Length: 322
Image: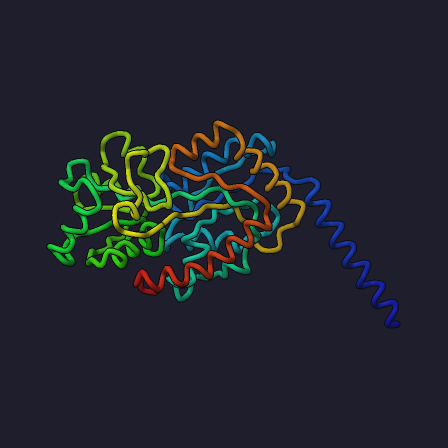
């Protein structure tokens, strides 16, 4: 075969591939979409996905089914999405834990957060809140620090699992305050919160506690954010309470790597429109979330920068690598 003929055939094959991809994207979606949450039901990650799933189903015209695929600090569900076809029918609820901190916490995470996903849209960020049981004698952050210094290694804090935002926030608190408290890892924030309310552990830094706070089951002591939450105006930030630290978890939508640009654009457009709906913003803000949104490129740049930023956070936290 002549060189010119070979080049022609290669060009035709590439054109056919692009045309096929474009046709697929134009018909998207024509079947149900899976929305994978790599954490158990009931936590903040699950709540964010479920707030989004119903209006997204309505705007896409097909069912959007939330699927909890938990385990290994969010790595099982995240890896499962990375291995799926990048056709837009499997979405990932990506988090700062799995897609930024993970590489520094796990020797074999199974995926590369910088290469194995296509960013779609940044959803929101939720700060961790220091909470203790309603019957706890502690009423502010100073009480906790004083108690920890009086009994080194005796107090415990719970989390949804090793490497999650709660674990890292607790490790940051331990390092920044210069205290010795013990981490207790659970399989999800729900079981951890239940043990906290029952008094089996002493404290949590949690992103999904507002319901229990409103119900009088947990007492908020401080918010790990740069400013107070509108829903908790009387609760100081950590910095105001004398411990200068921020610890917010971020959430976004990603697809497997090499997803069609048309599909990414469609999802980004629909989700941004949903994030502007007053009722959706209200639900997220009631969780203590700061709503984000924006372009896919903006989210991609943000996520890549976060991978670099979390290297320092994990190192300073002292969290061990699994």
